[in-house]
Image 1 (spheres, one colour):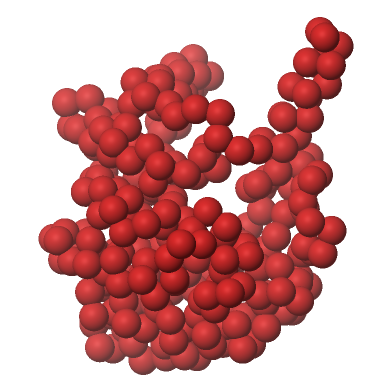
Image 2 (cartoon, helix red, strand yellow):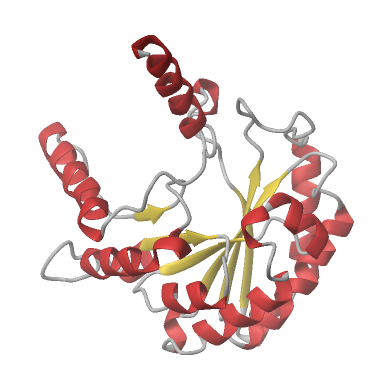
Length: 251
């Protein structure tokens, strides 16, 4: 879709205010978890994102626990990672591939920096946090025949290993690809067996790490909304198609 504009901290928080109002009026359970994900790159709007996260975890305002707020980023550069690490929230780094060339293809917005550069910058940034707050989520969207092989899994495990000198808990979130309009035709969802094999490969690589006081946990994200093209990575493109069609009628 591309950048339209950055939201201010107040605009970000207005979404939470609206959500709180909706759950109260509907008699739903209170909001207990907030994720900055799928709304644009947080690292390119770090000041507003950090300010919003600070408000969300302020006990005199929204009162969320910091472990209940997650900020997702592809890791634009070292400066953006350092800025986001100051937020009272867990960081989720969208890695997708440990191989530099493959990651440049999958994450073109971070072409200027190698995965190793960004990993080391992230480790430095997280090292400034209290030890209990040094948790990290690693997001990997799995694409059939592109980054879902056992070799890719082993590469990822070796790539993550140096982070354990700083980070005490790493949660690896495997996301089977959700197809959407406008995506490259070669992008396909991998078979469930392939996803499970990838998961097992990473678990095996870190077997015994919890006994050393570290934790590497691997799980597969359960898709929600994919039957209506409203899962992760799908909704914005569907929305854009509607906007474009309306614009054509208006013109």
